[in-house]
Length: 463
Picture (cartoon, rainbow, N blue to C red):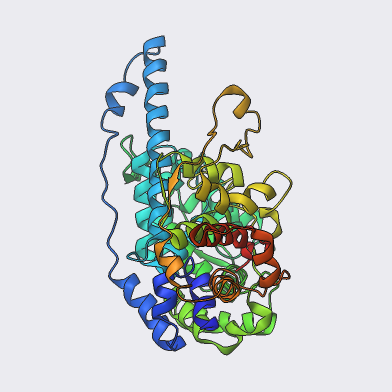
C-alpha cells in the first residue's frame, strides 16, 4: 500500500479515503495503467471567447473613457482567470478527474512559465498543456511557441524582420530546452530571426505574419539554412543535451530534488531515443524499483497547489467563495497563471519561509474550523490592512469518508490509521501521546481534531 500511496502522491495529488481503501491490494503496474488510462480519456476544457469586444475598444481614440474601459476589462478578466485557477485546483482534487494529467500539466505550467491576464488566453494555454502533457515534447514545444499567451508574455509579436526581439528565442534555449552553457549569443540572434512573424491577433489567435518573417539564411548551432522556428526546435531536440536538461528537471520534480546523475543519464537516453515521448518516460519512472526506494519517498516539499489539492481531496473540501483558493495560493506563493517570472516557481525549500510556514501548517485546521484567519498575501503583505484579504476560509468538508477508515477501532488504532493515510513518513510524535493531547470526549470531534492535528504535522508537508 505504501507504494501505491507514494505513486499517487507524486503522479497525482494523493489518494481520497475511498481510493486508499479500494487500492490497498493493487500492484504498481495496475495502478500506473489506471492513471494513464484516465489521462487518455480526459477532455479539453470548454472555451468561451469573450475578447471579441477588444477590437472596438482598442480602436477608440485615446481618452479617459477608453482607459476606464480597458481597466474594467482587465479587472473582469483577472477575476475570471482566478476562477479558472480555482476550477483547475478542483479538478486536481477530484477523484473523478485524471490526477496524472493534471499533475503533469502542472509541471509543464511551471516549465513553460507564462503569466496570463486574459481568460481566453489562459484557458487556451491550459488546454494546450493538457493536450500535449504526456505526448511527444516536440509537439508541446511547437504548440507553446505558437501559443498567443506565450507570444505576448515574451514579446514575440514585436519580433520582426530587421528588428528582431530575442526574448522568446533566448528563453526557449535557456529555460525550455537545452539550458545554459550550450548555446551562444549568435545562436540567440539567429533563432530570433527564425521566429520572426510568429504572432497573434487582437482576439488571441495565433497568426503567422509573412511580411514580418525573415526568410534569409541563418546559421544556428553549426547548421546553416533558411530556418524557421520549427527548424530551430528540431535542431535543439537533436542535441542530447536537451534530453538531459529536460530529464533532469522531470526527475527533480517527480522523484528527488537531489539528482542521481547515473539514473538521469539512463532516463535521458530513453527520452532521446523515444523521440521525447513524455508519457513513456514517466511510465518508466513510475514502474522503476528505485522510484519507491526510501531515499525517494517522503522527501519532497509539497508545492502550495499540491498541498491545497491534497487537503481538498482528503476532506472533499468545497470553498464557499471562489476567490478563497486564489487568496490561499497568493498567500503561499504559487498563484496559478501568475508565475513570479519566466523561470517559474523555484520549488523545493523555497516553498517554506517565515511568510508561509504557519499558514501551511494550519491550512487543514483552518479549513475544518472556518475560524477567522488573516491571510497575508506573500506578494502584497499589507493587503489585509487595506481590507483586500480574506478573514475567514469558509469551506464545507465531508468528514464521512475519512472517518470510515477508523470505524470500529480504538482511539490509538484510529490515529494510527489516519496517520498511515495522511502522512508519508512516520511522525515523531507517537499516536498514544497525540490521543492524550487531544483531550476530547466526543468521538466525532476527537477524530476531527485528530485530522486537523495530523495535517499540522511537519510530515504532512512532505510527499
